[in-house]
Length: 176
Image (tube, rainbow, N blue to C red; front, side, top):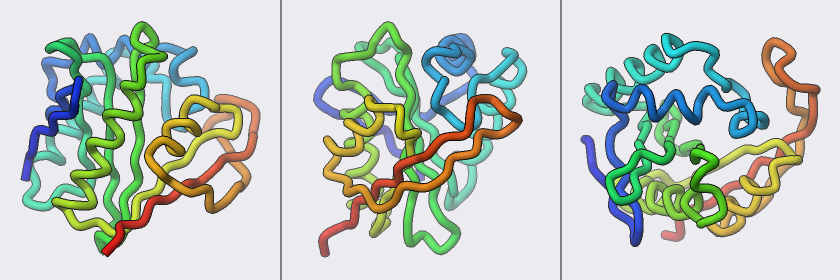
């Protein structure tokens, strides 16, 4: 099932335990993760458990969750993920890029690569993505992907991580 994805500038490959330090660098950064529901990771062990879960998912015949390392010239700079619904009728995209690499379009390029793979190879007809209304960068990524805003709803962060807010939900439908 595993498939490496190559875009114009990036390689998307399976996230592995070898990526622990580089993953923790962005997953534990409060600035990078301020608008994310289940981040930051508070310890290297939390990050390790996440990666072990991602590795185990890749071993399944039909994974429900794909976590890719985003690599630029062999350097791990972020992650892009796809959570697939049980009936495989839709998938949720997510992305995160180390702030040292912000402003170059890497999140949009990685997300586009994974979206194309999900639609064309996995035949998932609908992709969605969410972001806090204050997260203008993620909103721009969704718009670059050709996604359409479908709802604005209440956003309640777990454990009081951030003040409750609103979130956008965007979708992209495959054209048959």
